[in-house]
Length: 481
Figure (cartoon, rainbow, N blue to C red):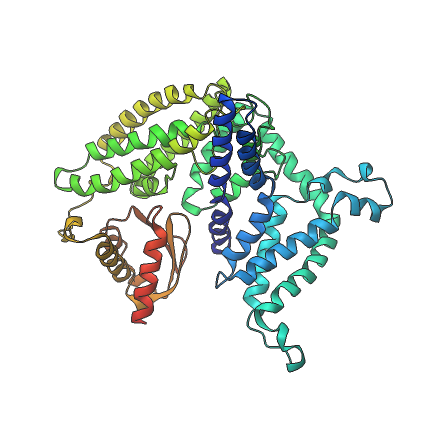
């Protein structure tokens, strides 16, 4: 589980590149919407599709970096080398030559060998080789190739072996992925609804990233993101695994935050407002929902199951009416505006209408359930009497420093922290003794939540600014250890 979660974290690095493609494609299409013959507009569109056309390479490089211990450039180079070796050896042209047939008669699976799945596998192999051999010393005669220089060489050799394995295995894997994706896509809007439901349910484990690869990228021939932004999909179909997220992330979840604020205790309402307002704004503008979801996920799991069901319903409704819109990063206002004029956008304004309806559903349903079952959402926990530092008393740097210090204390002190890492919104930490961790103390620092995921593994939910918290925590821990 820990390894799979680490993979999910590493997938966020190449995914974070997609907003660049979305921005370029969105701006280009806004220009061509005004003047369809605009050379500048087409130029910018091509710039965006150049990223999408090479997304598999980005995954090979990104996963290699993310899974390597030191996040070193040698790991990234190794991922690139491995990807080039496998995709060249297993190209339709080379496979046809090895099989002694015409290129058109080569198995269809090999025409799509340069895909995200292969990129991820190569990235994992490159990272594993880096972690194992990046500090190996060779005899003096070969000393130049020692350490990090050895890793790309070994990755190239390993990729030759992988190519031999995938020569036989890839058609089976390819057909299996196509069958799985086709089974879900064959269910039409219902399949989109099932995907949305399980996408949210997997959030606590971080495994939703793996599920997304099947539907958003070209693992099973669906490639919802790539086809939408390159305008190569099917109108009314392409985007069905994205569109329904907009009403949830832009309207539903912010309305849920409002309901939690209105049901908070008077003495805790100011503290709850600081958390819920920031998380709600992040969800609306950027589509980053984890800070808000983790604020009630473990405090009130009933609400989270309801949220997952409503997400599935939203995707089902949008797909049924063929209200289509797409995103490059997530379903926030920024991506909605950028994708509004894309050729495959279908009545995207109706997603706003749907969103307003879902906002009302979320608000009244969350408020009813919170009061009915006395759910301990933010602002409704038992009083702790712990004195909190006012944000107005410190500038941004000192506030971050103070919060990081309190997080470290809640983790049992610097001596109890074995490793520090992060993904898009979470600190991912390994501790020596989980009994020494005080989750309540960590949450009282103002973070949206915590999640113990293993005997020695804990996540602290921070939000989009997690990079700066990680750097500060790492700096303080290294200073004390």
